[in-house]
Structures are given as structure tokens and as C-alpha cells.
Length: 508
Image (cartoon, rainbow, N blue to C red):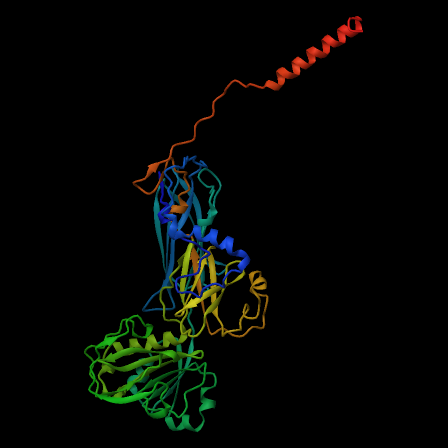
């Protein structure tokens, strides 16, 4: 049995998201159309009186032998990020045993192929552990029909699922220090970096030459006159003066950390509540420049992050020589988190999205941008409003979606009118500017309700407490009354009488 509640049917995939920029007003000639449309707004749908409408229900379809993928995710191991594991859940929605071939792909390369057999209604959960093969970060699971009984599938949409593996990027790190064994030793924990060490004097003499080819620079108790240019990311320990990328307002003696931003990748799994500091610099944040707090001592921000102009910066207000943090597990963990964030590798699990709903995708570091470009699995480009750094669009297709934010007036759709943009594809403009931020997501059907394709025997209108719809009246044979046949026979009889009387000279 199935239920349908009109009051709950309020989703309009074409409507803008809450808080998104409003669409342009309709021309005056369309006032009547706009008035009619307003009458059918979803807010008024629940007030429609359905009591006087005769609604009947006819089940459509007959097959229920569907096998679908209802969950698919991949994550890296925390201890060894070169390896990962995959979780997949499959269900047989039919009433007969089913057979399929399950294949796991990394890009176009098959990592594993195995036959599976499912009893009626059976769930199976498969975990692939310690995987390291395949160079592509795109993973795909596929169910293929097989020959024989129980091998066909009438609903192929849930036979494929997609997931993204957080990419691994090897970084070159320039360490500017007078010698700090704690810092140098902690760098050895991270196996995906190459460290180059110089003194502050050497850096001051030729900064441009030393920064060439570097991904990250770490300043230990040293603040250069100028912040390294993008795309070099920077980490500061106790920055001072005008050279600090985030303004320093004062020095706090013996600060005690009272709050950390646990939702930020840098502070993930890090506890600083019992760490001692001799002193620390307090920063003044400028949110309009992409600056945010990571840790505070009462009201003073002592650890801060900045994301602007294609680079990331983290400022620690304390000196490593004036704290016992270097003796805690939190210190190397925090360094790994910072380097992961710099590389865009701060997520061990990239969440997959579910189609058939409005998708809200955060774009890291995006400010002052009202619109993003979404490239769908078919290569078509669409616009998505951006509010508070979150792009919103309707997920209508399974597969990989690429969301990119450009500076105003730039990008594949930045210089097009709406008519041209509607048909644009990803290769329409190859010479567009680099995006300010980009993110790729995977979207799957992942809906047991939709994968259960067996037609419902009954339908209840108005929710669980509503009325069950009856079937239409059956069609029965009845006596056909076709009066035109009798008229035709009468006309033929009249013509026959006239013909006989004429030839017998009765009417002549």
C-alpha cells in the first residue's frame, strides 16, 4: 500500500532556494499568467478541498524483480591515508532469488569483480578493506545482469553508484627556522611532504627564489615583511608587527584555551584545554577577508585561519618554545590537519548526495560571489545561486557534478545571455578564467522507496489517516443500440419499394 499527502507535496525543483537572489520580475504582459501561477503556490496546496473530487487508483506495471545499490561510500584510513576502504549495500526488492555481477571501478579500471546471489528481500553489505590500487579518485560500483533465471533487471537507474575518494597531493614545504627539533620531528609524521629547511636570514636574502615551486612555507618565530604570494600557503608561529597576515592587537600572558572551532578541519580531534602557554598574540579578525577563529582564550583569538585569493594561512599566536604543546599528541596531529587543509585533503570521507532533492554544497573560501556554475554528468552547464558560501541546485542526475565559482562576469556562463547559457556545455569556452573555488560531488539515487518498483495494491489519499482510493468501475458488456443501422435498413426498403413500383408501371 502507498500513501499520498497533498499537504506534504511542497517541493518545487524550479523554485529558488531560501535566501537565494530573487528572479527578475515578469513583464506586464504576463500578469495574468503570474496571477494564475500564484494561485497554485505550494503554500496554498494544503488548503485545496478534495472532498468533492472522485479520485480512483489503477496500479500500473507488474514486475518487482529489481536489485539496486542503496548505499555506496569510500573513506581513507586515518593512520594510513594511502589506503582506503569501500562500503556498499545492495538489496533485492523482488520476490524471487536474483543473481548479479558486482564490479568496483577506480576510474575506468576494475578493482574487483564478483558474482552475487540474493534471496528475496535480502540486504547484503560488502566492505572492501585495504584498497590502494587505481590512480583515479572517482569510484564507481556497477551491477550487471547475468544470463539465466533471476538475472534481468527492469530498473537500471539504481544499478550504478558513484563516490569520490579524497585526493592525495604531495606538497613541498619550506621550513624557515633557526632550528626547532620539535617542529622538524613533527614534520616527519606526515609522509606526503618534502621538507626544505632554511634560516630566516637566508629567506630574507632571496624569498622569491626560495618560494619558487613550494606549496607551503612555515615561519617559526619569524615574520617576514611581506606575506608569501598565492598560491603558496603559509603557517605562522607567533607572527608580529605589520608583517602578520592577520592583525595582532595585543599579547596575552599565560592564556588558557576555552574554545576551539571543532568543525574546522585544522582543529579536528585536537584538544587544547590543558595545554600551557607562556604568552600568545591575540588577533583581530576581518571576516570580509576570509578570516576565522580556530581557538580562543576567553575573548582573545589566539589561533586563526585565513582563506583569500586562492591561498590558505594559519596563524598560531604562541611560540613553540613557550608551550608544552610540543610534548602532546595534539601537536603533530594539528600539523597534519593544517597540511591536509592546505592540500585540500582534509576529508577522510567525502559525503555522497542523493538525487531528487535540492543539493546544498559548501564552497570553501567563497565570499562576494552570488552565482556558481554546475557541470552535470552529461556535460551541460547550469547556474546555481550562492548564499553564504553555499551553492544550491536541484540534483536531477546520478553521477559526478563539478561546482565552480568564478569572479563576477567571468567563467563559462559569465559573459553569456540566458538563452545561450541554457545550451552551453563544458567545452564551449576553453579559455575561461580560473575559478575562485571548485568542488566535485557524487550523486546517487540511493532510495529504497524508489528502487522498490512493485506497484502498490492500494493508494491512500491524505496521509495515513486519509481515505483509500477505490478502483475504477469495471467495464461490462452491454447491448449496443445503433439507431443508424435501422435508419439505413429503412432507407434501403423504401428504395426497393420505389424500384419495384416503377418497373411495374404502378407509379408511372
